Image 1 (tube, rainbow, N blue to C red):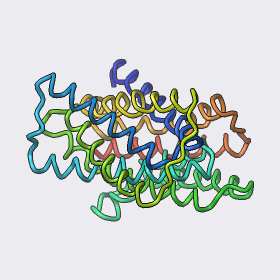
Image 2 (spheres, rainbow, N blue to C red; image 1 turned 180 degrees about the vertical axis):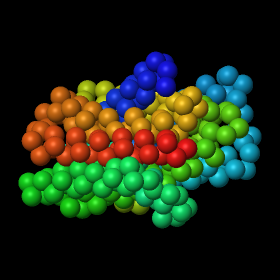
Image 3 (cartoon, rainbow, N blue to C red; image 1 turned 45 degrees about the vertical axis):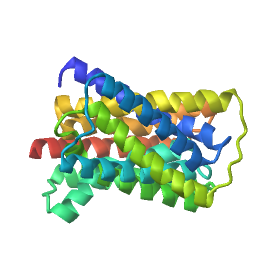
Image 4 (tube, rainbow, N blue to C red; image 1 turned 90 degrees about the vertical axis):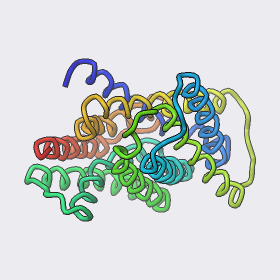
Length: 289
């Protein structure tokens, strides 16, 4: 892996991890699904407008369209929607740690649904990774963390893992920025319908909400998504996913710095074990590839 890919991966991991702390700021001031739907709608309009200006087309291949719909549903509507609702109940650091288990779930789904062989290193990584996440969740539950919020985060991570399995379908054929915009549009439409049916539009305006909302649109929304697809195009999905082993640590540190969330010794131990497990799974998948 070259230096440019390394910088891209580290930058993506920081951007991705920062979404949870800023997301918690947003849900403290606005309904989660309505805010997320508006964020996706703005991001989609920006991405599609720029894509059209660059000469990209929305005349995608049928396989790409299917991927756009699945990705928009699984990643944007389900993964982020469930996490935004969960952030009303659990700390940002815990949500980030659970979401970071996505590469482990991808490997588990690959074994269960596709019959992919799990090497001994991969099996060890799965055990370590899930063990580390369980260690943190157990400590947080005993400290009063909301079980429903944790369940929503787990369901979101499963949805993200399923979306990750469709990345190749979405990116094949070019028109990357247009694809990003369209899949965000899918997420915006789905979340808008659910929000209208379930939420009361009560907003507390102010600089914290404005800054967090703008940051989410530009950084975890557009920049991180584009960077992720570009990283996959440069080094492949397996190598790119290896950077997820940094997400538990980055998520905890950013939440502590931005929101003042406490970090316990059990959190540090769990993050280290989970990160080692994620890295082991990715190294095993890389060897298999």
